[in-house]
Structure formats: structure tokens, C-alpha cells
Image (cartoon, rainbow, N blue to C red; front, side, top):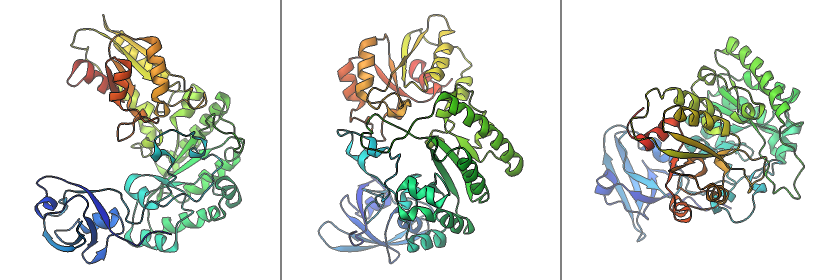
Length: 436
């Protein structure tokens, strides 16, 4: 049972901000805005958009204050909150056959074990949700306030198959939910986690065609491969994609996207980079990705990387040095192109250190799921000269790896110069300074 609405707790107040001048402090709670309870950050953000605002603030001593505020349109108050919702995060009620959290051992960051399925976090942060716990009131609010975009884990539109995959009797409602949202003009970005033999093949064809009927409300569909770790004892048997299966999928997707570009003016369907890398196929050009609507879902990162590399045209204006680029097995070939560019200049020695994922198992190949333990083992064994670049994707927003290490921990343990980068121009900046 959720707690009664108690507003949003203030985590920090920016010095010199409107909130600071009015005496708002960490630990206070914003209870209402313009006389209406603040249920979440959505309520607060909308209320603060105007030039006049009345805030009801619960102080740490139990008293309440009403603050009358006049400000410029869009001017921020300078408040950050401990969490985005007043009633906690809505947890996932599904038992997906491919759930990654169920495949995790103990001992990782506690936040990784939280199974959220909260549509509000989809609006605010781009989290993918299944809509299986969406109430009638939730749907009415989304429509009434026109809250979008939403990021939705669809997987399939077949009611029986979706109930089977998510193991939730409400999972079969997805078709009507999407239709209601589309009719209201809510922008949606959909995700299909593909499990070989279950929701790919003819079923994938049907799902994609049906979603395309909801365009432009359904603005993009990303197909990503199921992630399988070595911690699957007692779980439903699933298998990873083989290179040949990935090649067939890429060939099929190329034909589909060509048809969509002719009919809709954009690709609509986007495969995760992993499929191209596994199939040993070249990723599409930037024009294919239509502004990269699902970049955070691993769709288009390789193309962005290669285009960023192509923008490095000037020779490095610095004393040549040796350095190492660390990555997972999936992106090793891509990183080697960056190393080759640096090595084309006299005196530079760029190396790529590929880290097999012994923690999760060989099926997990992406750099974002590398642990500090695996990186430490490989770097310690290689003892590379010069600075070592780690992939930014292996760190959380708080700067921690999956197994809870910070950069400071890694530097202390390895005793070498460590840097973090995602794009080629960032490597350039770290090594020689300035722009490329």
C-alpha cells in the first residue's frame, strides 16, 4: 500500500536562487503548488512554468509556509528533490522471462535490484515501461495533460504471447492502451526485446507492421537482443542470437526500413547496434537514424562514434604518447578504428584492450555492462603504458561501476592514469587539449 501524498522532499537548494532567498532548505517538503497537491515532479514542473506561483512548503519543524512567488516565465526556483514522486516508485508487477534483474547475482549496487515500471519516470527520464500497472486514472491524466513522450516496452502485440513473455494477465491490454494514447496524440517510442524463436520472425513482422499503423504517434521502434547472463539457474531457457541469425535480421530490417522511408519519410524501425556488430555488418549512415530517437537504448551509438571520428581531421598538436582504450568484446572493432587513426601519426601508440565479460558471461558483450573487477584484472595483466581510457558507459550517473567502484577506487587499485571517454573527440581533448 502506498503512503499518503506528502509532497516532494527537497534535496538541495542552489545558492542565490529564488528558493534560497525564500528560505527553502534541504529536508523541507513542497506539498502543493497553486493550491494543488504536488504528486510528482511533473506537477511541480508544470506549476513552475508560469510567472506567478504559490508554493505550500512543509518545514522540517512540522510547520507549513505559503510562499508567493513572482518570476520570469520558465525561470527555475533552484530546488532539486530526493526523488521524482511523492508516493515512491511504482514497482514492476511482471515476471518477464527475459528480465535482466532476475539474472543478477548478489553484491552489486543496491539500486540495480529495483524493478521500476513507473510511467512518470518514462515521461521524466525516458525509462521504458510496460503499462501493465497503468490505472484508468493514470491513462486519463496522461491524456488530459498530454504527457509525452512515453517509452514503452511492447515486445509483441499478440495478447497471448505478451502475457506469456511478461507473465502478467494484464499484459494483453497493450494494443488498446497504445490505441488510446495514439488517439490522444501522445508521442511514443517503443522497444522490442527480441528472443529468438519467440517474438521474432513472422511475429516481429506482424508487430512492426501493426505499430506502424499508429505512426506518427508511435514515432520509433527499437529492436534489441535479449540479454542473457550466466546466472540463469532455475529460469526459463532462452538462447542468444547467433551471428547468422543476426545477419538474417539485419537483411530483413534493411528491406523494412527502406519501405518505411518510402511510405513514412523515416526509418521507423531501428536495430540495436549489437545486431550489426554480431552480424559483422556495417551500421547504417546517420540519415537512417532520424535524429537518434533511441540513442540511450544502444541504437546508433556506433554510427555517432564513427562520424565523430571522421570529424578528427587535424594532426594531434602535442608530443606523441602511448595510451590504451578499454572496451567490451562488442565494440572492440569500432575502437580499433580510433586506435588506427591515432597510429597513423608518427610517434603515437594507441592500443585497444578488449575485456571479456567473465562476470556476466560471454553473451554479455557491451561495454556498459563491464564490471570494475573484470577491468582491473585485464588492465593489471596488460600493464599498458600511458593513460588508460575507460568507457563512460560502465559508470552510473553517480560515478559508480556495477560492482560499486568509483574512479578513485580504480586509480588507487591500479596505480595508473585513468580517464573516461565516450566519443573520439573526448579522447582527443584529454590527450592534446582543445578542439579537434
